[in-house]
Image (cartoon, rainbow, N blue to C red; front, side, top):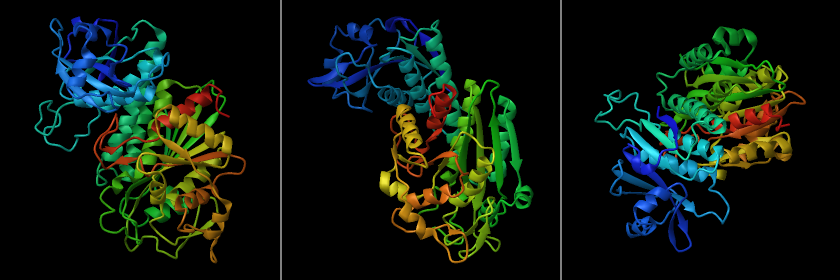
Length: 508
């Protein structure tokens, strides 16, 4: 992973492969952003004009390369767009810095060192730039020939080192911002690795083994229930979904505790390591990316480990409901009735609505511990993608104040989210003549119906939120900002922020 350092060195004398500067979109053309004064001076104060001549405008995501001025030890200057210039006396938005740093880091793949001379007005900016660099430099080449060779024919190695100019190496807040960026980004990138792994390698058992290794490394407690324990315990939802696969299901409980913690959060993740749809088989063209259906569990796993690495004064328990949804002679059928871990019965009308079934068991297991709040994360419905697109996740909750708090936390860390309702009239559509409820309801508002289904399995009096990350969990298009093609790690930063706010007493 890219190494992050803080530096007070002047850009001209710094030995690096490139100097990264920011350029904003001003009213009359591109504007050189703060942090690049020394670079601009070396161009006789005409850097903005040179960039405009080269076609740069300062638009977000734009990248322009030009030779460094005479006297610079770095041969290259990379100007990256920050978007609209902020109002006078207003600083640059953290997300704009994060995205710009990500664009530059990705463009500098194959380089040994780059100096980032982006606007730094405090530890928040340091952390945002650091996150952008680490997330933007991410690559997944495990399965490519020669991937361990930096000059492999399949691609370039990630940027090896990023020096953040304007950061203060001896300032405790700046050092803490870098440490936080490293911990969160490393775990988020680990979640991306898991999402990108092919399902023949990342089975429920293999995923559980990854959590056990991480637990040992970071001093976490882990409990793994295999198929025998799940049958004995009455986890009808998880076993119903996983019963059709030779790769048997698992329920993982990963626990981080702090001796001074006053609050307890439970995170629950959908972990369908491959989703064929089961007997209700998905149509052609909808199966190829279904290795990503465990993105919720990956996010929960990453968030718990990140909380441990940050030493947050809050207890965090992660529940990973892991199964593979396959058609076979032992698979659950449309019309079957499952008895869930809570004791409720569910008529399965569609075996491709499986995520809510495994989450139901995990939500009830989490509820039995009486946490202060539960947040579940899942690539749950295509309906949410239709409603919010491919970059925004939906937030539902049984408490409006908590829903607002989760939404604000997501926006704060740069994860687009939107609050969604849980209309009571949609609940009736899940009534069943043979069971307590069905796993399907009205077609219109399907994402909201799924949220209402999950609410049935949250313990009485427990605050709960549901994040449907079906859209942003897996990027099938080209990379943008610090977001790569493939697994994105959506919701990891939101969960970590919720844990931080809870530890600080600012959430509930």
